[in-house]
Each structure stands twice: as structure tokens, then as C-alpha cells.
Image (tube, one colour):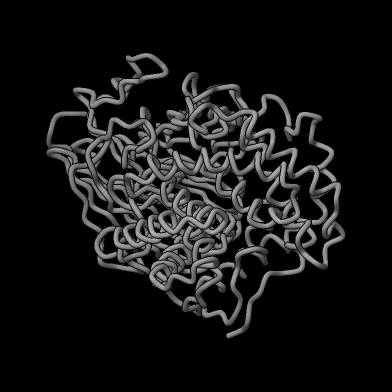
Length: 552
């Protein structure tokens, strides 16, 4: 056991960013590049932190304070009559009017830091703009348990301190208690069925910043559970495990923590592990992240997960399994649910991820919509799944003649050879992983053929754009926009990014297997979030495939 407190590199990242932030501000107070978004003004927050720290080269710097005030004034200028801003993204898309939670929470926390140093005239302007926004947030934004209202509740608590509003303080505290009550025993919150891994960070961030100001003990047990979930559902390279996520696909790179992890011993261990990966990489901390940690973190002893030789396994009841047999890391999800009409709630279709400590994530990548080749198995004609609606309002199915999500699932009992059985109508399908040694894993795909419909298994492989994918019969392609379809009718192997996978007879390779991009209103998803798909065809004569995955 060792102690943790915020590392010096966090402060350095904050102080180094100040000149760049100041240089990016225009005469009207707006930060950033065109098109301007209200979130560009979040930069007042790190400026306020740098202004407030006594060891900062910008401590009580008048130029920095002027930039902060001007930055807040730009938010006031952009407010509508209700205190909302236009939700605009850098791709020029707009999503209506919003009390942008991330911006309001940073604006009120900035004011909490610098208010007493501001002129009375500036305070009057900010008071009017902030009160307009938080009156609207209090009246309309805390009506359901969700990650965004939770962030709003944290911000409302800070607004209650600034404006001495006991009604807002009580409202925020009561809402946080309701959020705690909705947490799974395994440390996550859901939007439909099962975890939303990426957005669970929003809850723990909101709880951590809220706890720093309130000391409310009700959130501590929730933070402990959240820390246990994320400590287990993190790959050895610091990226988040996507397999159980019902909303977000895989995203490579160290996923930042937040102050919520700093208030428990396990959470501090988790943060120290993430921070070491960032520091060892030589990359600086994100300035907003550094600001959040420096202002609102606790410090103290750490207590990590178990470690050592053999299998390190973690189960969430009968719904999910992590099996870490270093250097292999396998995640299996058994979460099954009906198709959802919401574009952001993905189809639970992809149930296996395989990571190796040398190569990173190889198999998996998470869920999507409108792409049956991402499904671990399908029953029926995969060509039937096409968008027949408007691009901005797609028809997500179901499509008659195709089953791409299962009706039921059963997680295997073995931690050493993780397995999952899936039921698709009349067909029973199964996938099993068997680590053979440090460089070889066997993947076993099995399926019945009772319905008279086509039955396929799919292995989704993470692409490395620009790198070659090659096969045993001499094909070599650099992954890019150009489509690739290879037949494994004679058997052989495919090789890419440090791994080799056997390509059995009767299989085929497809690139790119594009997902539906839920975060764009229009247009197709880019190849950056596509997958290489290996399709395995089953029949009454061919019900079993055994593939060798080797790391070079």
C-alpha cells in the first residue's frame, strides 16, 4: 500500500497551457477556432485555477483575470432568453438549444474561484447570466436519472454556494441520493440494459466534484463501487473495455479518470495506474483534466486489485466475465436485450473482446447499429440490413429474414476458458476462448443449422489504418478506404498489426465493415471506426470452427 496525491506533472500541464489559451482568445472574448461553440469557453476554468494557485506563475495575474471575465461575457452574449446556447459541434452540425452541462458547471466553478476579485460591474453581468441559466436548470434539467442531469446537479450545488440558495442545495443533494439509489451493485448506471462504460465516468466525476464541496457521505459507497467496476473494466494499456458498453464502441488510448476516483483507496490506485501510463508516454495531461484533478481531488493510501500468476477473473453475476491471464485479457458480455429505436442505444450484438499486452486490442470493438457483420453470430441474410430510411432518421430494424441479436445468452462456468452460448431463434451458437500459451489463443465458434436459414459467425478485428493486411495466398493490402474481400475457401491465414489469425476453409474477410455512426446526423461512418470482419459460414455438415490467433 502506498499513498497517492496529484502528481507535479498535472500542475505543469496546467501552467504550460495558459499562454496557448490566452493566445486563442479573440477580442470578443471567444476562445478556440471556428465554428465557435459554447464549449470553447470552458477554457475560463483552467485559467481560473492557474490564477488561484499560490505556486502558479499566473497567481492573481490581472491579464488572466481579464481574459476570464471576457470569456464569461462571451457566454452571456450567446445566451438565448432562457439562458440556453446552441448545441453546435466543430463539424458545423447543430442539435438545438441546450443548457450545456459541461459549460455551465465550469462557468459556475470558475465564478466560485474568481468572483471576489471581479469588479462589481462584472459580477452584476455574470450574476444575471448565471442565475438565468441555473433557474432554468433547476426548473427543467433534473427530471430523470441520467449522466447529464447528474452533472447538472453537481453544478447546481456550486451555484447554491455562490448565490446562497438553500433550495438549490437541497435539490442537488436530494437528486444525488436518487442517483446513488439507481446504481447497479456492480458500480455502473444504465440507460437501457447493462452498463454504459464511457458515460459512467460522468457520474463518478460529478460525484467526486460534488463530494469535494459537500462532504456528503452518501456518495462514497457509490464511488467505491464505481472504482471497482472501472478498475476491472480497463485494459492493461489504460483504455476502457467496450464489450459490455451499450452505447460506445472501442476507443484506443488511456481513458482519463476524474476526481471521483480520488476519494477511495481503490480509486486512487486506479488513478495512479492511469497517470503512470500517461506520464511514461511523455504526453502531457489534458488541461481540463489536470484542472479538475488539482482542484477537487482527495489524497491518501491506495489499495489495488489482486495480482499475480494464473487467472485473475471478475464476474458480474451471470452477465459478464473478465478473464486476465497475462498477457491475454478476455472480456465476454452476456447482456442481451431487444433492439432499441434510439440511435444512441446500440444493438447488443458483439459479445467478445480479446486483448494482448503486446499488440493491444485484437478482437472485438463493441456494438453498433445497421451492421450485421459486427454481430458475433447472425441467422438469415445479412444483406437485408440496409438503411431504408432517411440518413438523419434511419430505419434500425428489425429486418424480416435476419436475426442479428440473440434472444438469450448463457455465460460459461470456466474462468480459464471463457465461453458464451447464444440463442438465435431455432439456432444455438457458442464462442469459446482458450489461451494456449503467451503467444497463442484458440477461438472456437460453434453453431447449429436447424432453421434452414444462413448461419454465420463473425470475428471483428481492430484495424490499424495504413498498415498492411496480408494473407497466406500472397494478398497484401494497406488498409484504407478501398474495399477488400478475400475468400478463405482454401484455408490459410490473415496477418495484421502484429498478429496472425487462421482463415479456415469456407470463410471470408471483409473490409471495411462500417458501423452506423450515431453521433452524426448525416453521412456514413468513416473507416477510422470500421472493423475487419471474418465471416464463418455454418451448415449441417459444418458446425464447428477452430481458429488460431497468434501474436508475433
